[in-house]
Length: 448
Image (cartoon, rainbow, N blue to C red; front, side, top):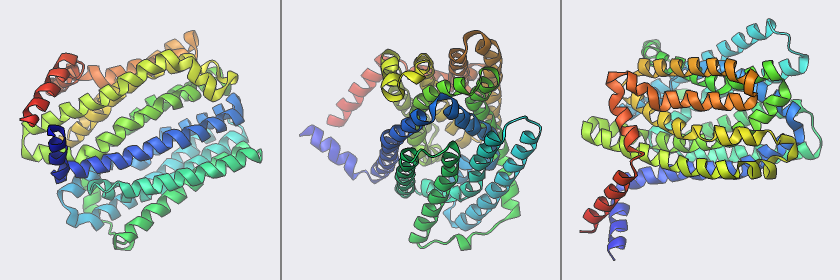
């Protein structure tokens, strides 16, 4: 009876239920992506083989190094501004859309300049440009920010789910008809088109119109002033998440990239879990900050506890079953990927820490600190890749990734006096005794 009473109290708490429903929608979409997307993604990898899959992954990583320019680090800042004052919606979204469009065009220009000085073959160059073209359509992700700010992520989930299912069906058809690699590159543009169309559709369904958007130069300058540290941080994070595949391609060839990418994609699937949870609860962090510092830090601790203890069991299970997982999913041709997976998966714990603390830095308007910690992570990653890839191959790249995320997610806070409280909060998350006693005490109080 007491348990039923507790559940009813939670159910009647409108704010808690609102965020729970929002998070549930996002998690449901990620579970769908884990099942359908993983199944089709693995089938594509098996169909293409390590060499062609490696070329495709190399092209995606190459584009990712530049496409973060189109993001401009605006995501969290735009959501923060929409939460603060929704009456400025059309001005904010219109300004963000134009900024992201300009960023996408600049990214394409930078890619063209770099490719001009490289000696890539025609197929590689074509695949890179097709994948890069999709960044233009991603300007409509400004609508996603609106839905996140209003805790209405279910409409974004509808769009992502429809895009995923449609794309997956077409990819299966391509495989069955023995389509060439270039066809899968075209699918990148198709996916962005379907997703953008869906976002616009649901925006109109809410009796809102993109035609009402307005570009405001003054607001654009203000947003860029706030976002440039986060933009550079995003660029740096993307570099040390993708540079390993680019460096493997240059040092060891496309087949080695294919082996590494197969393992990295399985590991990085779990990165989405903390990102979903934290993105959904970010508005509640902003509201807590406006109420009291104590509540703000309490929610920070709870959020950090949650994402870390979701990641730890996954890392342990994958360590013991990694070889079996790779063999079942990819087959013998990707045998080398298993040793990469059992190392790479442990990065998910420190990625979870970095995602949570990254949102705190946005809420506290400490973009420069986020930039500095990511620069440190990049330096560590590059140095370790240069040292370890020639010596240990793709396993060396996995070690470099793990160590660099450890530096970013856990260690950097020690060296910054303003952020040492974050380090203590992160350490507290590993205190099993605290977690058990807090849960017991909390439950006991609620039952009274």
